[in-house]
Length: 225
Ligand SMILES: [Fe+2]
Ligand SMILES: [Fe+2]
Image (cartoon, rainbow, N blue to C red; front, side, top):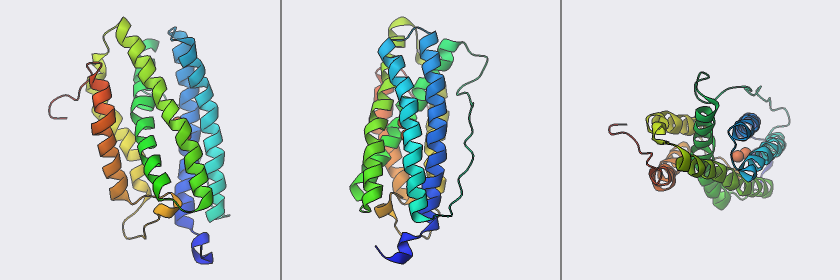
């Protein structure tokens, strides 16, 4: 790798942004674990959510290491912690189901799809190692949501999630896309996919994984959405 490419603030910014997102995910999983425990979810699912919070903290460290690799002077954003997924006036059970679907079934599934592509294209050794390590965990994190949804679908009607599906998907897709502005080189070798490719991968993951998975529980995208 050339010296010029080694110091690359644009790549560093993306990894610094991801560091913030990982901290926020850790915060969300901590809250999700509390919700799962409160609603009497399977102890294994709850334990997995708790462990996921620790995974996300580890991911944040990996991302910050990479950000500094590309720019030792890179600045990190302050994560937004304590943000509830879904309206606060909902019951704990509804908030927990909403968070499990939004965070795990949708966001972690899209994240896994992007990471699979990144892993296939990355050539920088530390990027490749980091992407591989994070990918292993994100696939497990997505399963927490599917497991909780399956559990809840046996107890109650979960179809009310339908009307929230568009905003969940939009929120999940909006996270990664603003990172790469147009007119830059393809930085896939460093874990930064072109914006259009990232969009295509996420749309495919929604169509082929998220929507069919949710449809098996009667949760479908409402017509026109
Ligand atoms: Fe993560
Ligand atoms: Fe995750």
